[in-house]
Amino acid sequence: MRRVRVILVLISIVFIEFSAIGQEVGKVVIRNGSFRLPKFIASLNGVRLHNEYTDLESFNYLDGTKYQVKLLLASSTTVLTFSITSEPKYVSKYILMQDKMGLYTLMLESKSLLALEPVQSTPTPTVPANTPAATGQTGAVKTNNVSPNSNPVSVKPVPVGVNSPPAEPTAHAVVEVTAMSEKDFAPRLASIKKEAFDKNKIGKAKQIFDSEVINTGQVIRIIKLMSFDDSKLDFAKWAYTRTLDQNNYYKVED
Image (tube, rainbow, N blue to C red; front, side, top):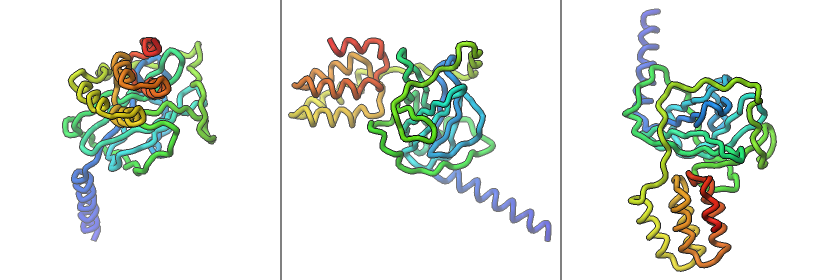
């Protein structure tokens, strides 16, 4: 009788493994862009894998496309909230960055086929998929900072104390984040140009560049297609968090 139970347990384990493999699932990886940034505890749609601070977190077996991620920073009460996307059969890698003003952004670093990733022996729990709450900004990357147990408010993240030792860098390859290539940008710009009114141009531009990384020069080329200053300012504000070379953004005002 005991042998029969063991066989049934083994069959159940094999069935679960094959069910997971057969599903079209995705994977999300979040990491710090610099070892100087504080470590974090990440949760996806309210699900935590553990309560230890780290500078690299992976969420496997994701069967949804839209998620809300919260990052609790070490040595601080600041919680960063972002909306991200996942795609079945792909691993989406996001990088946490901080600009000169102290504001954090979570940018899509790379996306590659999940089949090319090393196989993990122990699967992590499946994170339930749902549409993240609206935060007043569209797109795959959000820069809203909120305090724990409160409604979302705009706050400046608290950096790690001066006397705190820097976190050790993680031993993994650093992938350089680059802006959209001219080959990909040109046809998108032409599509926006076809619209007759500024309202339609802005709507299409935000839809096209929603989850892309662009540079200051490309932002300037987009706003030159618009007739009114209010329209140009609207898009320039929206595009700032998606711009790679934010130190050159003063050129947009010129």
